[in-house]
Length: 219
Ligand code: AP5
Ligand code: MG
Image (tube, rainbow, N blue to C red; front, side, top):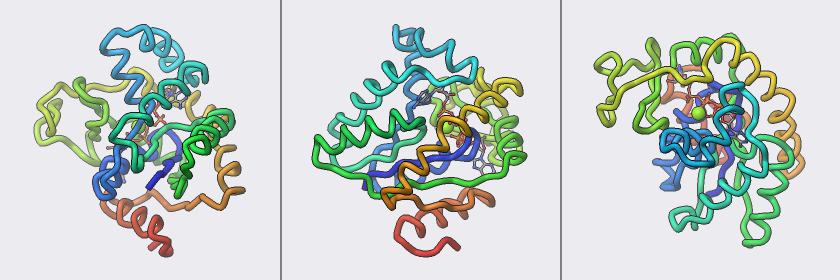
């Protein structure tokens, strides 16, 4: 399956992607995680992305689209992928359409995670991620690690993302509404959008998402 996950910052895209990608045996491709890996490795791409990310703005399409395309062309993504955080504006969605068309492929679904703004603010405020891999995500209250400050998966140090400050979160939410939400209409016109509530326990949301992807009504 080829799936796009969309939703505001802090909606739980990364959290859900880990379970959904596992259930569906497809790779989880997060452009945010790719940028963060580049930043921690000190690459040129990471240096280009950092200032935009720290300010809560989108990294320019010229940088982002090429990076996402390279990742989607890796052998593990040949039979499907779960995109998290890409596309993030209509230009990226159109670039993805073109890319898929050229490869004679198509998307199966765009899963839209709906969460009220006060809840995303709480989720972001308590989020802690792992220094070794930003896909290892915890929350101080909702999904605490077994030992405070230590990643359950790999033992790495947990920290708060640089862009999770209150001011940057406000910018990220605004960028989501103005630049990312329009992709939902772009995909609605293609009949691909399934919207679910992302409220409730993590496993309840995963069950709801799996049911929606199977074409069943959301529970
Ligand atoms: P990115 O990393 O994609 O950030 P984002 O979209 O803002 O989303 P988040 O990662 O903040 O939230 P999430 O939905 O993954 O939530 P999570 O699962 O962690 O992008 C960062 C930046 O990179 C962008 O601002 C931009 O600069 C750049 N960028 C990336 N892609 C780009 C692109 N395509 N184009 C241009 N620029 C790009 O969950 C949040 C917290 O909630 C966690 O603590 C988790 O434990 C908790 N939680 C999850 N589910 C639940 C639940 N059901 N109940 C309670 N708590 C929960
Ligand atoms: Mg994420």
